[in-house]
Image 1 (spheres, rainbow, N blue to C red):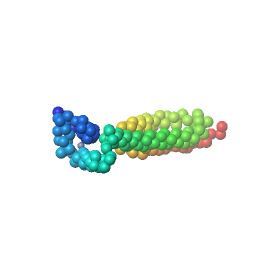
Image 2 (image 1 turned 90 degrees about the horizontal axis):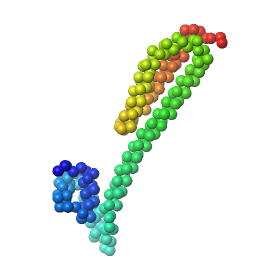
Image 3 (image 1 turned 45 degrees about the vertical axis):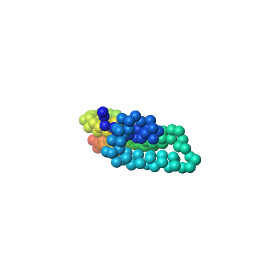
Image 4 (image 1 turned 30 degrees about the horizontal axis):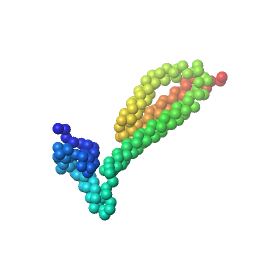
Amino acid sequence: MHAMGCNEAREWMSLRLDGRLEPAEEEQLSEHLRRCPSCALEWSHWQELDGLLRTAPGVAPPEGLSALVLERLRQQRARQIAGSLVVIGLQVTGLGVLMLGAVAYCLHGVAPVLSQVPYLIPAARFAATHLVTVAGVLGEAIGVLMRAAVSRRAALLAPAYALLAAGVMAAWLRVVVRRRPAAGGPAGA
Ligand SMILES: [Zn+2]
């Protein structure tokens, strides 16, 4: 028989309170409670609650009470998961804004250069050799983002990494933009 996990144990606690466990299952749950302090603590809380409701004069435990409590526990856990998804979503959104800002910044820097296309040719050659490096950094940043979708710790690193990538991209474009006038001098027309 497989070792019982804590999630299963919690569900079985609910069934035990309702008297719906088979003797073999009772034994399995007891075995888990002996080995798992956190479940044992939770079980003692359940018993307390159940005892209170049973001894309270004139108050019978409503049918399916434990199922209600279990449902509440599930909702709590769902909220925690939703919370971390929101954090990741916010980070991805923030990252998108950041990247758009970087692109806008770069385009703004590049725009005057685009009107002087002939001078761009040596710059383009220079750019081509560096584009590989920049693309590599960006690709890596995207990779980190993808992993962020599955790991919360990586999600914290992703914005920093994307910031770095955007910075590298901006710096690279700045160099391209600055280099051209230095090499050819400002164009008259
Ligand atoms: Zn446990």
